[in-house]
Image 1 (tube, rainbow, N blue to C red):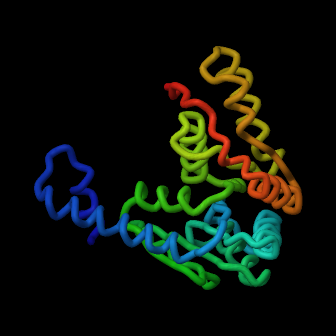
Image 2: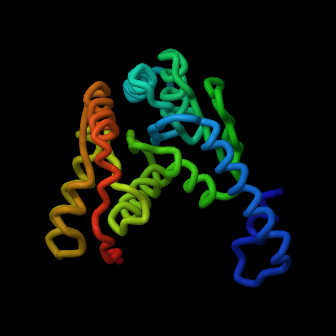
Image 3: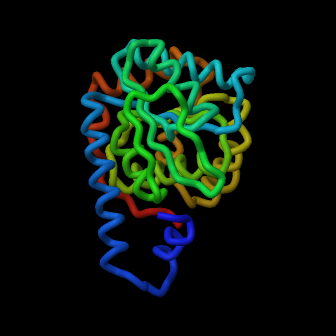
Length: 234
């Protein structure tokens, strides 16, 4: 499907309903099959595609991927360069399963070279479903709009009990401090979220601690203890 054809699906006026529904359904089917192929618990890692090997964040993500693999978790990313590549690379170095769910973009995003399972999606919503479905925990390194999009979508899904309450860990306390301060001083202060909502977030600068947070939850099956559904905050 070309970029122009892809845009047609998101237009208000539907020109070929059956074809578009079939394309989307097939993409979901392919995604579910890919997640099933993982065969064990996974941790989804997000972060900027723009981080090079010389960046300390790249080294941190690579170390986290390695430690997660050694702890028995598959490492799942968006399959591209930067933080994604680093985490997938570490997973292979640690002897684990490395998964990449890539996306077709106008400026082509190449799949990185460290993937055992790879699938490229046309639609963000299908891809995001699989990145959540495969996860026993979510880890976010510094990133741009895509990383922030994933963060807040997952928080809403947990908040409203659409998915189980698994760990959401922000790596890089200095990077995330401004956002967390704003959430407390503006959003929480005006009662737009609750204190419990903000407690969904954990912050760490240590890859080993991140693994411990995820592993503790997984072993205690804490994500299986769901809260009552809450009203989504606008």
